[in-house]
Length: 45
Image (cartoon, rainbow, N blue to C red; front, side, top):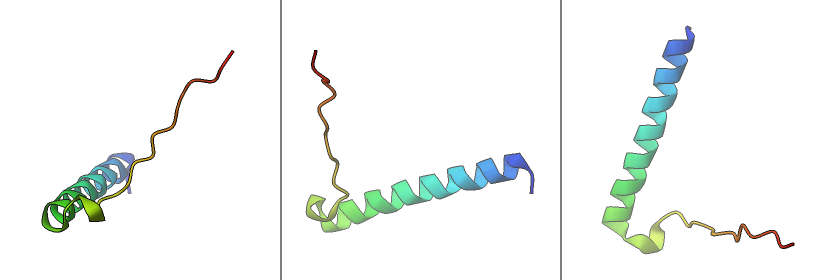
């Protein structure tokens, strides 16, 4: 399997995953969505 085929398969997999999450969130609402954790990037002095 060539490197191009591996790249294409990974892109298709990622797009499919994102569309699946979008459809799931549209049907079930945001309470079922994937949570995002926001981390403070300030490291101090």
